[in-house]
Length: 515
Image (cartoon, rainbow, N blue to C red):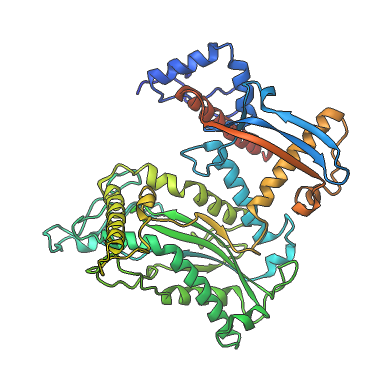
């Protein structure tokens, strides 16, 4: 990889200020040539306009077609649109990928929406009343169990730590020294790798990963039952619904060993109402809720179906490292000595939601450990398909409905098939509402530019976040998919550099605003 001659040298890329350039360091000579060709192309201005319209998306979806906007009350045609009017002759639409490694621009929007969704469930806003902040709230981290010792990275504090000092003389049954006296930094490729690959239980790792969503589901059910018991209602979920409801926002994050763990904000509300945010029962405080959560996590169990006839039985559960802490304005979940704000909590989960897969699956994808996990996923899928063939041929050992038939399709995600960001229905506003509000805002600002009329701020939020039933127009479209992505890697590099430049400029403006 060659250093691009397009980058100012020797000063480092500042990333701030209105005159800062794009950071194109680390690109190949071929990509650099493609960038130069784009800048000199007669279509450069049209391409730049299109890039701006999709917000510097790295892999936009290209469509041909058009749409007609109709007034639902009168049936009047309010306007028409054709993709032929676009600078490049086709409509480019954001890819919407949440992963930062794939599209920094779209992942940034996803993180911003996740931030607003989580924050409104903590402090109110975005159709959520501020009184929700009075309800008990807990920040919980649910981890996977151990599948074998792995090399440990640096601690979160400033004091370096040795990897496995207590076991420095112990040997495993394969003759490998279990202890490790090294001090690994976070970029050390050994971090997260098994100390003895032969001892590491890869099959249990994959099976736990596959059933992690089921463990979370069982946790939420058991938590409701335990709260009902605490309130003297037995274990009846029906009785609990008349008194209290459990709401949450959850994200999954990969550990460096390739196993997911869950970060969640769990809130206790009162009974269901039309608004959905009633006060919680007074006898349950945030501290009490944290204790119940910790006890519930420790007790959750699930016995999954075996992969094959000789597969040993397993009982799955969460790891012993359970962190459930009451959220207070003066404490941070990951550092009790530091202060916590609602923005910090929302920022944590929004960051995890966009970086969880990219940081581990992408950056450590070439390690032997990750390759072994993916291999086990494919082996399980092969066994399941073989059993299906046997079943169709009449073999009694066959099984046509094995739950592991599709696990091979999730090998690239190390066997995890769950959503990386989820929430209960009444935790707060939905991501769909936020996306719809963004589209409405674009329509409002476009109309303002055309007519010159100022935006009415009196009921703007209510207008942006109104339900679909309140829509007064109908848009009928006919579209044909052309493809995804830009023409060259040079275009992609420019899009990603422009997205980074926009993010850094926003950070610069925020910094100067608070000075």
